[in-house]
Amino acid sequence: MTVTDNLSILYLIGQASLLVQLVMALLAGLSLVSWYWIFRKWFQIRSARRSTESFERDFWSGADLGALFQSASANRHECGGMERIFEAGYREFTKLRAKSHDQGAIIDGARRAMRATHQREMDDLEAHLAFLATVGSVSPYIGLLGTVWGIMNAFRGLANVSSATLAQVAPGIAEALVATAIGLFAAIPAVVAYNRFTHDIDRVGIRFESFMEEFSNILQRHLR
Image (cartoon, rainbow, N blue to C red; front, side, top):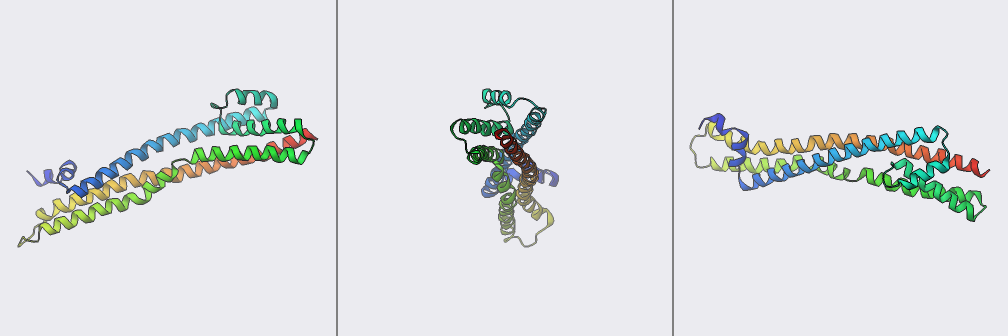
């Protein structure tokens, strides 16, 4: 077998020690799961942006609030986050207006209802981002553990050799470095995705908060 064959990735993985192979398997699993959530969150955030833009167009086009409320109520589990925030606020507004004449209490109740729904929507958007952050943080260190262990084994194997050559040392060191490479392969996409998704979610959250303030002002004008 040639040196090139000895340094092929599959051969190095197959010849690695049990601990290094376990580290590689763990990192490969973390990478697969992180890629799954990267695609899931990408589609979820894209859907949230589109539904927000669609509802804003309908809302600011002068549509009747009652009609928008009926549409949101009928499709509550299919509509977007901003539409659910509107539905919660308008529902509480109409309920309190029928029971009380205290304008401040009515608006505060509507705001609390919107705030609670807003928090649920943000929690849903931010779900599993912590996993991506964890993968991005710990994967290089897990890979480094496999690398250190592999290099230790490589040099221990040379303890009884009178003269070591590069051909004897290279395979052991190369198989150890594969663990670091897999760790970086798992960490880099997770970190990039986490930073991008955090930025996008913050922008969606700002739009939700702006809408709540503007809608509260509209409800106040309705009471007057």
